[in-house]
Length: 438
Ligand code: GDP
Image (cartoon, rainbow, N blue to C red; front, side, top):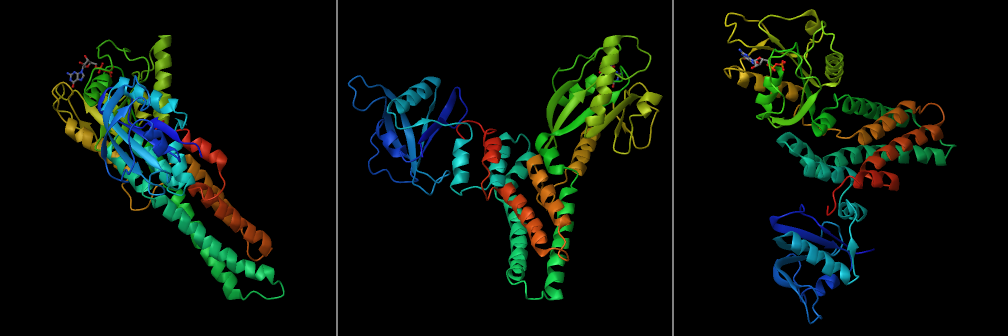
């Protein structure tokens, strides 16, 4: 196995930068920069790193903290050295050049450290995906979900189902191997019950309203309403910066404007859209309205805004049971009130806390913090669906060999999720999404 090297912290200027080496030459490569004889594993050592220990014109790179993790007790399961230098671009360049010049290691591919951790049995695929999500997490709820997955929650769940099915297979195979033996009805019934129960569990697990995937990707919130009701002003308030042009000329927002927010720990992808009205001849505005309606059909949360009680028929069409209804400009119409509608004034800053709470509650109802582990990727969902359909095909009262094969297909589906089999093509897909140095 090659020895690999990468900067694991983000590139650029920083107080500290962290570099990682993994593989059999880790210590030998470090030896070319500093004296690391008798280095104690898992202890930080202060070392002066020089560009070449033998060269007369050697350059001192930095005084760095070096820590050695001896295989197999490391993230990758291999010999690992981590180097903590000052976070300078020049140091990163000198260190990289010096380490590569010895010819003992090469630069790591994206995700290669995590891939090695997987190959050495340190992580299953779902935990690796959880780790990738943890690095990407921008809000508390995303962080919570990623932590649960990284700590092996999904692996435990799918591994448990796999084990249960293997148990059934081993029972049935005993009868396949001895065809002269009659299978007692109780054995068949027991296997059938177990498969039936697992089928129900899988159906329940799948009918989750895609809460985990939606939380991972961010919940799409679209602001809809007639021109001039205050949609762009709301976007600006929510984003706390001037990203949409606010003006009182109808039709100013002609395209879809998108921004990412954290509301109550939920990742919200907010889109402001063109005002919706039927009486426009402006082609660009018409296109904007078309896009607004398309956005609305894809969104997780629709926020329909109107002024006082001026709800036009075309706005009425957009409202469904799940829509958040907001009445803006109550400063102009203090007398108007409406059941199920949140009254606000963006001008006076009134009612905005209630609106934020309503968005948070809606997000929570879509992706509730649940006790049960969530599916977070289409890849997992697809394999679970494959497992389910195999179990639904399984008929123990017909050909027992075929029925056992159906169960085996389901077992393989769960193995593909956790990676407990040869899955080169899945590996490529997952680890290529990691950043270099992870
Ligand atoms: P949009 O076309 O729906 O995006 O509406 P804008 O956000 O561009 O706002 C249209 C006009 O309404 C602007 O002149 C805003 O300053 C004004 N406006 C927004 N919110 C309020 C409010 O709460 N009260 C009053 N009186 N005017 C508002």
